[in-house]
Length: 472
Image (tube, rainbow, N blue to C red; front, side):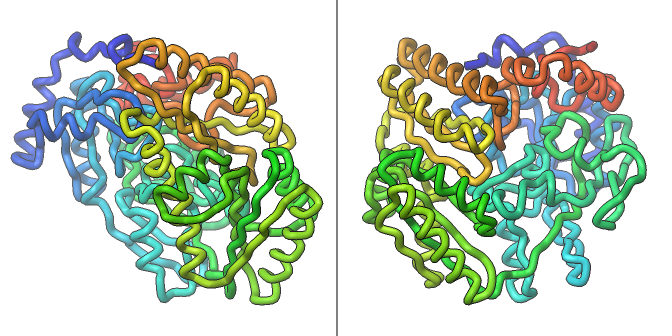
């Protein structure tokens, strides 16, 4: 568990000149009260709050441009902030500085129905966009669970329950408008669905975790609402049967929209929290999109495959209320698991492996959990090989913290050995910097050179993805 104190050189620098300039420009909109700054230094992870010196909520790209120019001239760090739902300390102000909160930049600028895309400001949340699209016949499918901002989702390359069919933010961001460190405003692409013109700057910015620029607008893909949606649940004797079912579904070409894996402990927590009656054993939640006949056929074929893998109690429904209740229970997993140990704090982490290695990776991780004697429910986006641990840990117990760190390290190293990644969707932040180096090796150096070229004064979110350095 990385300590921010070991990565926090903010006392070495004088931020007063930037604060004075910003105060002259923004007046009372520049918030420096301790209580406000403390709130903006903490995300939803186990990492402690590391507050900025000040917080500003700009209203447009021109104001962001002014802030960036002042901070770059004074070599003052900038920490972009969306909804604060990140999970690897991504918004901790490790070097102090100015937090730019996108909350006031929440306009849906345009929806292009014929081109299936929308232009939005970065503070627009996924629920807000889908509510706006409610009567249009279109929807935005990326659903990480939390009601995150689209800017934050793009910055962390968010994924979620629908990724098996619709992909992650990487596949669904068409263009990004961003203010760069020198104060210039760039567009990373046009709205055409493909291009062979130059470097793919959109893909570079997606997943950059606020280290390369501040997003001021995004063009995102939209999709037609399916004619019919059905959901299903199926219980298995073991994780292997559940994972093999999903592998065979994909091989068979069943276009499942969502497929989530939950272990018995997670189902126990869900039943307590959501007043449900699921069997407390390895379970798959499914969702199918298509025509009325199509979703029925998808469910029927899935049940046949599940039966061959010791699946049981297969139940499916097209009832909207029942379907929403199931997915609401899935999205409330963190709160449900917290009740398994009210005095513990959730340490949420994830890895992603080739799907053919997923059952093996989960089974070995379960053995490590038993040896560590730590409460750690498992849930995963099994369709793309991604799973999460929700470690419930007493952060005042040094022995328990050490055991959790060992468990976490084993889990990540196993994923890397299986040709997987240290994080499927949480990002690196400052919590997984050591694993990024192990995963990418020499490829980290070109990443650092890109950062140095685009942000030579290292003002954008320093200490994230790479170690903090004033000079590279």
